[in-house]
Image (tube, rainbow, N blue to C red; front, side, top):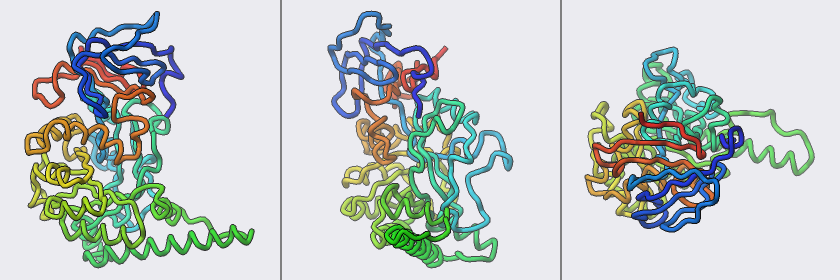
Length: 397
């Protein structure tokens, strides 16, 4: 993403006398964050402020890194629009790995404005879960006009889905898959086909001969087979989670489980296998059979077992501006404030593969910062200012 600082005046400012939550280290009760040209230059209790630097006196207010929603559909299901803005599921074929969320997102969707006003600066936007293989997610910032400039990782994963959703969609069309067996079988065959495609390409390169005709489906799946991006697997029930683990091990895939609603039942196993989880949306009703075990304790149980956890809104299921509320409820249910805050900042960045850029307040990282008048989990706390790449993108009146 091109930093706004390359297009506007040089950014040079310091936030002083702030209670800083770096996330990567202990809380600094009163300190300074120095921002130069859209990047964090320094952070600490004592920071030298260069001449000519604009000083923002926080007067005890709280500074945190921009919040990250590790699973949502902002801009794919547009606010207040039905079919015309419904672009998250291509429900005409169960295998659509070549669909790109990037091509369906409207950056003018009101959800982006809601995100910025709530201090949410980074989103992981995925295709929906109607298809066995749904397409390629994108990780992006929440400010900008051109979606290509907002993207910070593209492609950012391969979205696949297990269980109730693909079954329901294709049962109504009287075509495969209508069972969990069918979902797993179609997924395996797609991965095998992509392996064959990749081998043919490699042999052709070795011999200096023309390779197979270009196949965008196979290319998309190959990004996951090569572990360039993770397989982001929609799975609620324990049996579906275990099928995702089984297939990931068969094909040596980097696995992130989306929702992980019954993950608390097998938390030690998931920790042992190094599976990461994006949990939620817990702040929703039990709208289908797979959600009957939904509870606020899942994130805490997984985290305490050693699973890396992020917390999602699944917007528009839960509105994007309630991300901190979702994390606060997980904290209350046993996760604790520190772990829950990491689940919407640094751990979310790690799971999304963008922790070199965002997720904590450290020198060299993007100046995606939020100034609040209290702890982000307190119900009466307000976001005062949101910065992305050192530029103000929201200012409370």
